[in-house]
Image 1: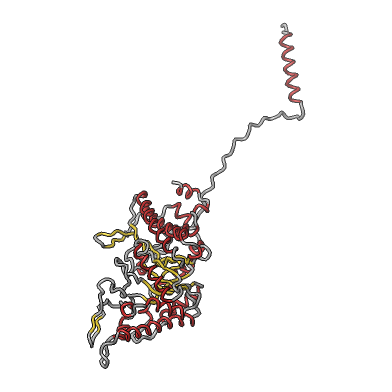
Image 2: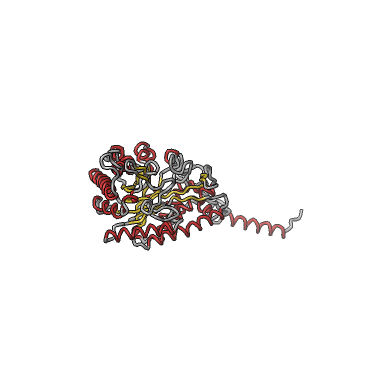
Length: 472
């Protein structure tokens, strides 16, 4: 058999090359490892957040950030006092709601406990037993007090005041001057007695509504003083033996018998209250009635002039706001924008007086009016709750933008929750507050907090879902 030399040479060469490759360096052959497959990092899960302090009807993204908000008072600007109007019994008897007040507000206004008919007895003496439970509780909690109020035309002890000016068997009808003096004495006893009692309790009110709701709706005249009253009330009638006030039970128009009751009340309040206590005059519908606001300012100027020097420290606007939101987001935005024009104008006008400005009783009722009758929206949609929150935020922002800082006394919310016992007599069946019937934060809570902070606090939590929601 013949050997193919050419084939043999090639085969030997190949073997030599293979041997050389195997023998280079180590005894083991090199292993070529393919490049690693890129690993995509796992997207972290959205952190768990306890949302049990928020209303269940909120969008999940909103609910998650709202649960992380601090107490409302933590967002209040320096020098600004965030207050709450609340029933004394609600605060003293309900531990859960008391804790909400303590966590979120800096000052309270008692809804009724400091009014004339709650303290003044039929013989003119003052009884503080019920009030003291509330005063002791807020003092222990470190909360401030805003006094509400000295002189109003309702919730007065009419029995006592009428007895001072009624005819007597011996002397018959009393003269106008006798009636005036008797009422001024009663006024001083009332104001002095309350001021001295607060002093004995070691409480210095931050502010006080010396006069409440003096301007009549429609006419913009002074109730009592100008012969106008309210509701079915009309001028008193009198004979030599009997006085018929012709006013509803609990109503008493001081100005009907004491024409200068405004300056008299402020002078007494200034005399007996601490110098640190700011004296306010308070009224409602000032954001919707420029004429009423101007009438109030005119009267304040007259009081200051009659006193010789300015004595009224501040103007209070209650701001019980009613809105009728729908499920149309665009229409709701227009509603808030239209309201903003009125609110801006109100604060600008009040600021021009140079006096302190305070929102004293802010709530926002979602309702419709049919034939003049209020019909509360009892089951609002998400869009309606958001509109309420937007309105709260707008009002807070407008106040901070239009009232110079030196004139900012602050804002008080009226009532804590939507629970029925807080609305037995006011906005019945309404949902006007920041906490719902279960004491949980509503969207409105977020609106007030964001307004105070001047930003969307929710974006500070770096929550991707909420960021995406807010950009929609």
